[in-house]
Image (cartoon, rainbow, N blue to C red):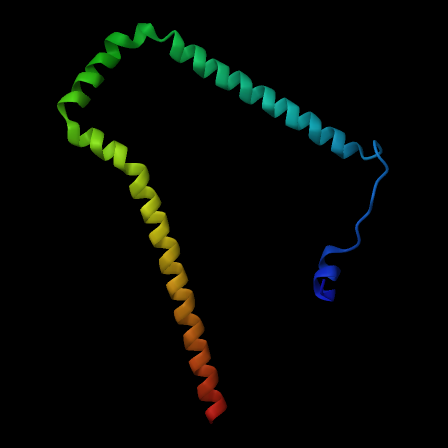
Length: 114
């Protein structure tokens, strides 16, 4: 390890087992948040499982989607389109970074040549 990274990290302090109270609190938060997530997931499952009362309202949407296959195709394609858009953004950022590095290199070479 280099000395610069050691100075940033500092020294590690090892606590005896069971003496670090914040660790217990973190486990408590972890269990509490997982319990909340489980309740939300079970609530969604129960809501969808017993959602027969929504059939009259959703049948119109279902019929409309069947009549417009282009909309359903666009809905199915949208995750792929979003991932392609994000990938394009990362690629363009990398290209700009390479161009900036090449420009800095050229400027440094011009300064060194003078």
